[in-house]
Image 1 (cartoon, rainbow, N blue to C red):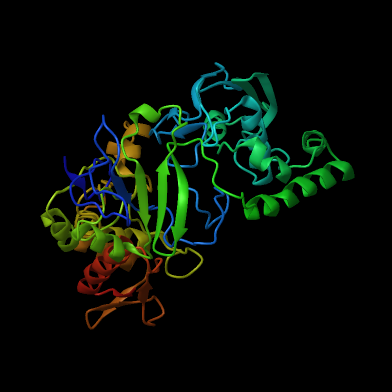
Image 2: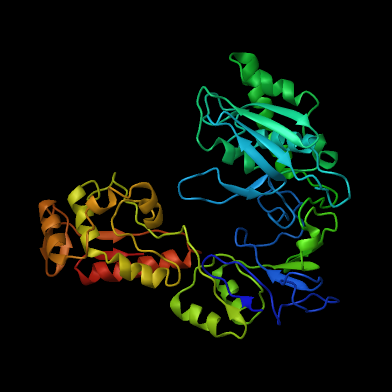
Length: 450
């Protein structure tokens, strides 16, 4: 068994040196069969633990961990061409109508909450009501919204049918339904008024009454965001035990419908505020698993060198790209944009910014390379690849009226030109990419800054 220093699509097993909280053993928790042990990880989607935040999946800082404590109806696969493919969650199976007009859900027959109460279709219906207050894709109250549900029907204790409003259908309707958190109605029902479904029906009309109903439902959104259950009531494999500013500790939920296949007795989420802390955890052997975390080559080499670490690579849907503000000169001129495309070596940028799982685009289509191959396979070979070519770049710049003086390109009016690039400060891979692009442009006589 090896500890996963997962950096680009990371799946995990556990091993020998997982960090442990006081009083717990340090046995591997990641192998199938047996039980016990501690599994240590981080939540890549949420840096910074808030000790006082509620166990609420809708709260931006909530102590709710998708797939561990918080459960959705299904877990979407992010399939390249079929948005509705998903893995079972609280829904064990589903049937999508041939015209995509409805989805019928069959819930896990043995699903229970961590307090032992069964998960029912009424729980799901209430959870859908809560999703309406947040304006989720399938459960939007915006008039004319694409892919909005028209009706939610409880067929029996473990079956629901959700229909789509076919006035403006969306091919991603089923995905929007499956991407819904399921919450216990015996804990959460107070956030919705008794007449909620009447208000929802009224909101689908026109006029002042409909406007008022929509305003009422939207107003419930803040109540949902701030709702604080007295304790975590989970339908997932784990339930929150405690949290402090440095870590969150989860314990196994004995009532989870698939508990026999859950090996660890405990899961610990370590706090972090940026990629650098995750790198340090991995190089120190403190994590059994880390989800997608961008890292430059030298850092990756240190992570790989740590005893017990293993990197598992998969398709990464992340890619660095440049977007131009075409309301500013000279980026309103296509020849300037073409010239820059000829100057930037995308393979080099990818090697610097995403050395492990990055895929350089063969064209400037604006679509991730893997997705482009799936969506436009016949057109892709016809697109201009913009292979690095200084002579072609200079020809494009001259066509745009730019001039080169003392080895530097200036704007058509003779004023200085500097390419300014911006990215969030915490995105280390994007920053590395920008620095590389900057050096390539400066070498070619185009002043640039990050």
